[in-house]
Length: 324
Image 1 (tube, rainbow, N blue to C red):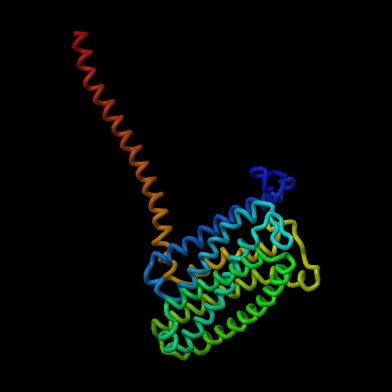
Image 2: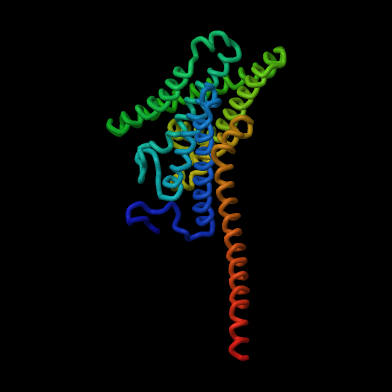
């Protein structure tokens, strides 16, 4: 099998045509998700009107996680890595746990939207920007504190902690499903009774985004979650060669691409911020470089033509004078 620096083998040995497709897919996916989620991060952070709103802070938190998830695929997808107990060239779940940060963030984002719509006075008074930032930081601290403890305790105890984490995750998923249904009902019935206003449109937009994002997240992540639960309960479940060929893990990581795409699709303000802050400058620079290069070529040709004509005009009289 091919190796990189003679340490970690590549995820595939390129003995079959599909190996090339798997390797190319992971390169394209990692690049695309990192660029798309990263552009959302830059768009929110560079636009004051966005990062001053609580709902965009939650989007920023998940987009940072998605950017790191995309970058992690350059290792998980291209090299022979198997997370678990025991692991092979693993990262102690550090890279896969970026999705765990998103799980917690989505739960808090759902409660945030519920309070903003159903209890607006309480929300404006108590749920400040500092509170939301603290909650987002808590998602990271909790996730990686658990991983830190698991990495220093004996393997048997770490396996027990991991099993307990799966149980907690089941509770969180149940809460997410219930909150998704609740938010859908609010968007369907309660907001329809409010008079038309910009605040009503903002609430509808935020509810629509969080509902679609959570449904997409659960749809893509559910097969991996069910397979992990089955393996812990029955010791069966599907097992794969490594993370690169793990279809369920690939589906779960696909959220790093779908989530920022849904953010951009659902929010015109975010779409404009991403375009103005990132992509318009990229395309403008490329266009300017192309135009500048074309102008240089045109001017060089004009200068060469003028210079040639000038030389002819100055040389011909001299030659004629010598002949005469």
